Length: 157
Image (cartoon, rainbow, N blue to C red; front, top):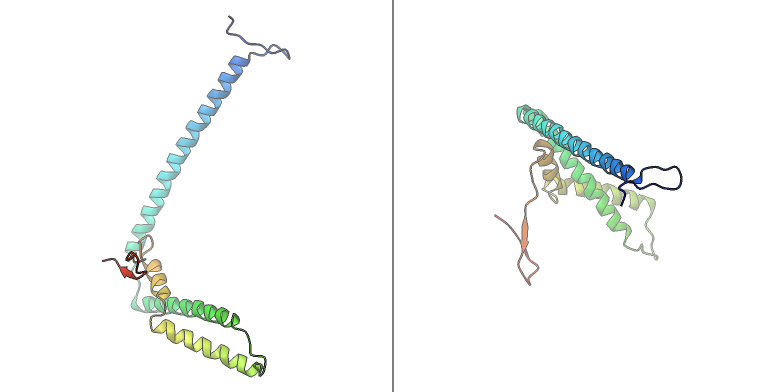
């Protein structure tokens, strides 16, 4: 049996064509693997450099205070949005509908309430943001375990 296979459209060597296509695919896969390894090495170098720069970066107490305040305000903004959306789910009373003045006062009260909540510790979002911004790449979320059958969570030590 002949090792040369030809087709009826031009006598092309199909076996050689399939072999060359396989070689092209293998070559592309090798280049892709090489590119991936090169990218991984570059990414690692950039991450190491960023970690080194972060370790060297020393913030002044004033900058640290500003960052903490910004994180607290972000938490207050989030809580205010959440509270306003929760209020939107409650049906309005039909007998005495709220006036525009009441709506404005409610909104102002919500702003102050959520600001006070975030200053008192809030839901922990401000601290989480602060920790993430000051120490990127470090896991800051505490792990909790739930006791079987109780639904009660306890913080892992």
